[in-house]
Image 1 (tube, rainbow, N blue to C red):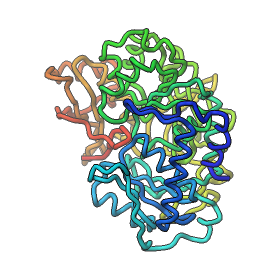
Image 2 (cartoon, rainbow, N blue to C red; image 1 turned 30 degrees about the horizontal axis):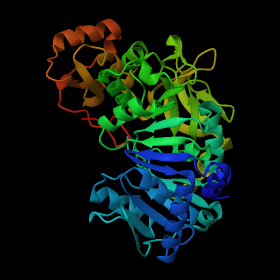
Image 3 (cartoon, rainbow, N blue to C red; image 1 turned 180 degrees about the horizontal axis):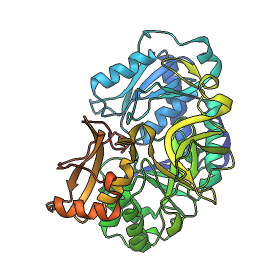
Image 4 (tube, one colour; image 1 turned 135 degrees about the vertical axis):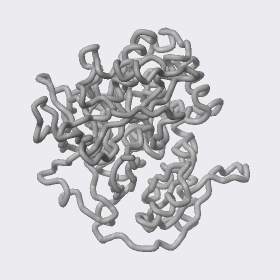
Length: 463
């Protein structure tokens, strides 16, 4: 089963319905399928074959979606490469995959925005790759560890979009505002929205102006963005009327700071629903009905998933394991089938969390990020949450610094808000009031920016 064939079949009666909107351009479902079909034929004539691995380095937008559907319709496999990647990063990804071609954006202003360039692969995949009928090979966002390339088949994509829709309940009356980078967010979202015949308003460029204008003009019913984007909405002056049609407002990519959730509810009149998405597993958790007591939770596991918290500590925090439908099919480099790395179908997420008595999952952070200070655990995310509540702070990053006696010592980078100044002594006293003594950073450093990955996550590391 091809995912594009599935999208076509499920939208037979919606050819005149708007599928994509970007600035003044609108594309109906009929136009979307027609243009994707024409490009698919052009790609095939240019040499793209089924199972060919195509590095896709283009800016997000309507054309990104159209060309993605065209590649998938030919049976090609998309290898998303963030548009702003360095040459070394592109070379590394393409070398690991052994790509058969590149689709990149033109710079000559021609009407055809993207171009396809075939090439000879540096290596061939194992035989099992072809039996899977793959559709995507996606590298992780690079927050921790070496990325191995996650392989997703057409069948897995269909299963995980069905599973996600249990929470999201997308329909043809939905108008979705889209601001996230498509190289990182596409499979379980964009493809689901298209399957259900929704209208996607693309405003990835010219942030925040395009985003704010889309909210004012289109009055979306569904939001899928990061806390950074919601903070911009809070500061924009948009009133509750702009969100009057919104039925679900999802915060993803990172945990929403409690202050952002509280202020968003106060100013916009809606609750932010936190979600827990994993490239290997899809979207197994969405807090679809949050209230003040569960704002910090990513919700309960969907019916298609099981969750297990293993080796919990005294607070109930342990390793999060997940299994269910739409799981990834393999790691590409080095090749490792899902059955070989998921005992009994269970996937070790690498995240730490706890389940409350009602089954709500609360994420504490990455297992790799935990700072062992004198034998005691310090969760950087927990400390950052407190620091970011202090007046005048726009963001922070807690990291470990090696210490001869203590092992790893928690320290923090602080980014002031605008031209405001931060009194470090008062900030430290604030932290002591809200954190255990051993969790308070031993050193604070003022910085101009907090380093983040393209998907909006804080880059971790020791100094």
